[in-house]
Image (tube, rainbow, N blue to C red; front, side, top):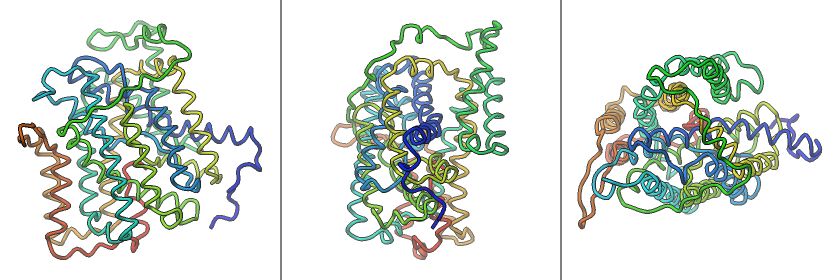
Length: 458
């Protein structure tokens, strides 16, 4: 246990606590606001119009802040974790945006987004089911059905399935995309202190400044369009309610989004292990994995209910804990309150929403690649033996299903059209093969360094 760590931030005084809370908010900010911006770009590409209600920057910030506070209540106020937007569900949003059969054929973009969020609600409820099962039978028995040979390849597929989206966005202005990518790499490799923790935020900020300079000089995108458009900023107010949108439910959207929870639950276990290792306390035992899963699931379901993206525990904030050595969960709760306050300032959201698609593409280059790379790390650090035919078969089938079924499988049950997406098929196939094939030798908790890095969002 770290002796020089600060576990009660109150002795630092209120000003320092507020500053530490602000640092945590900035750590999660870049990645959290990127999710609604990315999702909006999918709907623009697929439907030709932007989402005006739900899944906006302000709704996302509200969901992150309020979801974090809800998580802390469920976790007995003990775990210093921040819940931001989950990247794992991006593939699901992209798939829903491109659905054009059945009820989705001529659907308005806001309604499509509402159905996608309905799937997020169900995904969150799966956390609650998992929390109950873990409470009843114990974590080791449950994790036997979700070994790294299944979760690793599924995470790899999540990243690779989004690759074309990154290229599409970056292609609108390759220069700005490469600036964003270069800045992220520089800060990630050579950054010092706080800057090493927030490379994505630095990439967004610096490339946006470059875009401002180019725009001021009259330079346009290669297709002739303006690099930046500030018309929405002028009309946005200083104070206002986030544009919440109540979700809708449809079996196809649920089957697109809900199975992704298999990967994000593994991400949650990885992040809880990482936070436990950083702080020097076993949060898997106290307050217990079932309680942290319950908090994460409730926060995700609530976010989907009001038109926000799924939540997940954030690796960036674990990095800030490591850097600051202040382990008091109160500091995280201050950051959550800051996020909620900003969600009620539409002007801030409008400025963020002017982000050029090319910058989003440049950032996505790094993000989507890192999602897949973390899937590879999951396999490597857990020492998955790919000389065994059993493991090769499971990984191979997951890859082909996850990348091959680009349009998914559509079938009709009782007059209702249902589409199983590639990721859903891959996850189901992997879990079933792992159950059926003999020789499952994985035991959770034996290799702590491997279990610690099971997350998508590190």
